[in-house]
Amino acid sequence: MSENLTKNCTNEAQLEKIRKGQERKFRWRDDWPAMEKAIMAAGATAIAAYEDKHKQEPHA
Image 1 (cartoon, rainbow, N blue to C red):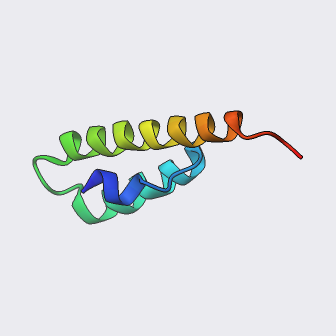
Image 2: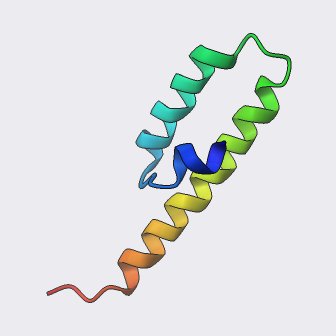
């Protein structure tokens, strides 16, 4: 689930919006802390991949 939500995540602000949206839906669940951790980890991975991709691209 987390990977689908965050696969196109490009910055921390975007990740925070995703986290807040999911929190509104799922904070009542006992497993919300684990879900939140997975979302943040997947988002951090997506952001890092995005940044790496753009560092490698030559600027015209």
